[in-house]
Length: 287
Image 1 (spheres, rainbow, N blue to C red):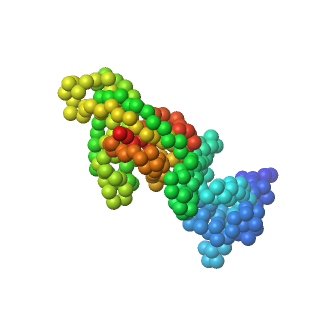
Image 2 (cartoon, rainbow, N blue to C red; image 1 turned 135 degrees about the horizontal axis):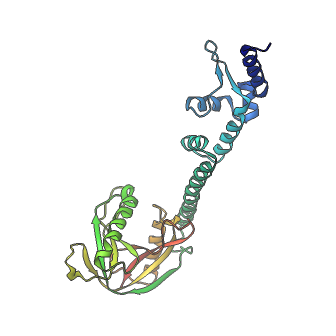
Image 3 (tube, rainbow, N blue to C red; image 1 turned 180 degrees about the vertical axis):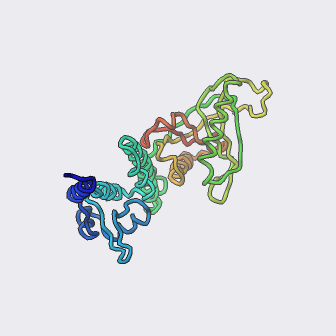
C-alpha cells in the first residue's frame, strides 16, 4: 500500500531528477558567470544559491536557476547597473520589457550626447577655431512678446530640474493670462556653471497685456537673433556649450556683437522627442 511518506519521497526524488543541484564550478561554466560574479550577485540578493553548506560554505545552485543567471549575464553585457538588473529580474514578463526599454532609451540619450561632446573636443584639441561645421547658424526676427516669467539664481546641477518645474508652473498659469502664445524660452542673464549661478529666467509667451497686473508678466522687446538648432541629446551640459561657442564664433566672423543675454528656445514636445530630434535653438540677440 502506498503511504503519504512514499508519495512525499517520490515527489522529492522526481524534483531532484528534474531540477538537479549543480556545484558552483558547473553552474559557473553553464551560466557563463564567473564564481566571483556569482558571489557578488549572492551578496546583492540577485542570484542566491539553492543550498549553502553551513560548515564549508560550499554553494549549490538548481539547474532551473540557469535561465536567470544567463539573463543576468546578457544584461551585464549592456553595462546595465546591478540595481536595474535586480528590478528587471524581479519584474513580470511585460514589465521586464518596459524596464529594458527605459534603460536603453537613457543609454541612447547619453551616447548621443557624448558623440556631440567628442566632436566639440576634437575641434578644440585640433585648434580649429571657428570650424563648427556641425551647426548651421541662422538668423530671424522675433516680435515683441508679453511673457510670464520666473527668475532664479541656480547652479548647473540643479538647472534642468528647476527649468522643468518653473516651465510647468508657468504653463499652468498661462490660461489665466490669455493662454500660451509661443514656445518657452530660457534667458541666461549671467553665466551658469558649477560655480556661477546666473541668474536664469524661464519665460512663457502669453496673449495677455502687462496691464493685467500680474507681477510675473513683462514685455520682451522685439529683436533680431542668430541661432543654432540642436537635438535633445545636445541639450545636456556640457555638450550644449559647443552650440553657444558656435554662435559666438559665427558672430565674431561677421564682426557683429550680441545685443542681449543668450537664450534657449524650446519649440518641441520634450517628452515625445527622441534623442536625435531637434528640440531647441541656442540664440543670441544681435544688433
